[in-house]
Length: 153
Length: 169
Picture 1 (tube, chains in turn yellow, brown):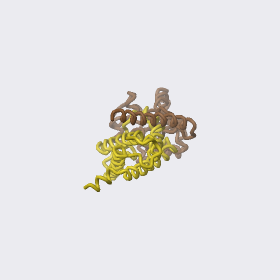
Picture 2: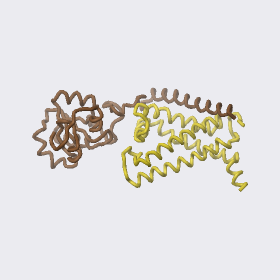
Picture 3: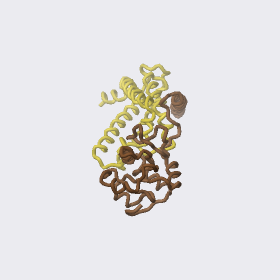
Picture 4: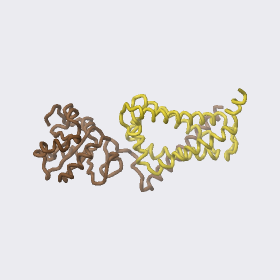
């Protein structure tokens, strides 16, 4: 039990999670920054935001992912960036879950009863929940190991 | 603890601020940049937010343009949806030419069309695409002045424009 606890709260675990989560966010942001119109369409298809806010989200959100991911890896503003990442993940999770529940296929924004679409939504959901758990671990236990930023206690 | 959390939130806000500034500047400079306020409800006939199946050569018009054409009473409106959907409600005066039975219905509908007149096609809502496909088939048949009303039936109804029900226009 102690080993599990040590592993879960350990500085190496936090550091590993920082690298992994940071890399995922950087990777995810690149394509969105390169193709804002496609990303705007994807946001539109979630059918959650008011249409007037869709584009500004598509313009700003990928950069928030890029900066937060980069800072997380570098260990600068670690808690701030992981908080931002956790909040983003939480929003994504709620958005996906909401659409799975009401039967919107987020790949086309269309209403569907297709089991494949639901499965797709659920796998996204599990992926994001996994990332959120990593984020919460970092938020709770990161000791600034291998960080460029000032160590915070 | 509380002070630490305040600082964390401040850091997060700084990152958001930075992202906003960089994102907006980058978007303004990029050739792929998009308008900051989306025109989803009023799809832009020149710009980027067009149906997924859009191809070069498709002529798209906004709801506002469609209304102007409708009021001129010199434009033929074609409903590309199934007969059942058409009968539940359609643009008043629009003729039903289901994309699914295009060649079956065309001979009958043809006498009410004119190659000189402007034609506006529409389907269900903003991300349906049979109005685009119908437009392409009509162009192949020599109807050059075909345009697609991107917002479709949904946009028309939401704008409170004239509609009617049943099998007749």
